[in-house]
Length: 458
Image 1: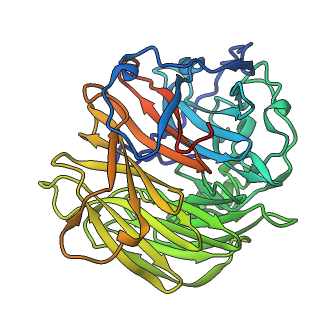
Image 2: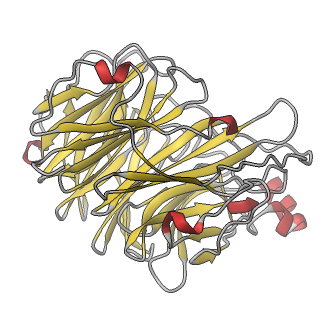
């Protein structure tokens, strides 16, 4: 259960999760279009984004931009994620609802994009429940059995963690709050409770779980033991969860107390071949740890970057080298600045500050393009104004230096007069997928996807 909710955090990707009401729910709204038929993406956004005068990222051009609607009646948008492979892309997100009366709910959604010439998109909703004993649904894109698919928790209110295989076709959900959904490929319960949304590797079925250790998977599974543990204090922890083997495996990566760390972990994870790197926040610092594809720890954790006000990290590989990016400021009176680090087996090999202008830059995402780094981030303030920017940085420029460096090229993806936040990026060959959460016209938010071609073949 996503309990103990995290509130909005400064300078980072933020997951808004609410505390469930103890009252029972009578909600059973039928959603006849929970699975939407494939449809062709529009060639342009209908908003002002289409008219913005963009600078150019070298060799890149826009293919199309689309607003992904249909489910905004289910609450506030959060945890927007994207992954890509040669066949297309997979976008996931959640909507969290805290009504004035009745129980809160959280529902997971996904859009499967097929790169088939017409770029068809199929949207699905994962079953959820809205009563006190139910776990919140949380979902992330990953690679399962060699193809893009879903890792999820809380499907139909169950405390289990699932991996799925079969794409959009297995989700024949007609009523979000009554249906159970398809059988998962793998399933596991843990003596653990999520407090942050699911985060998964794009290229391997491995997730990083942020929450609290518990005597069993939920309060209702072992009430007496759980009550006793709550009185003692449930320690906050970070876990790996791997679906790469025949049996799902999990291991504790970090364990604190019931009061520390105070801030959300906001973890990130990336995999390349047999190597997996996760980076996460421990209050005023970022830590990193190498793990195996089965989620086993390799060596010791190490610090990434300076201590201070640090935001949520993002991680990617370029060849065999891993890179992390995050937002940082030494004091609250300063603007956030982006940092990029090259991470080796034994720790950080080099790090550099990026000069993106005078305004705060935060919530970065990172991907590989032809051996260089693509960075996407949000520029603006911490709540009401945000624009999305994209930049390119050759990896050889990630070297420890005095002062900041400039990106080789940079582009504004959206106008500066709206509220567009928390961008994510995925790349496959010359095709670049960038997603962000747009709160300009709707307070509950709209997922937006932009597709770029950075080569000769779209």
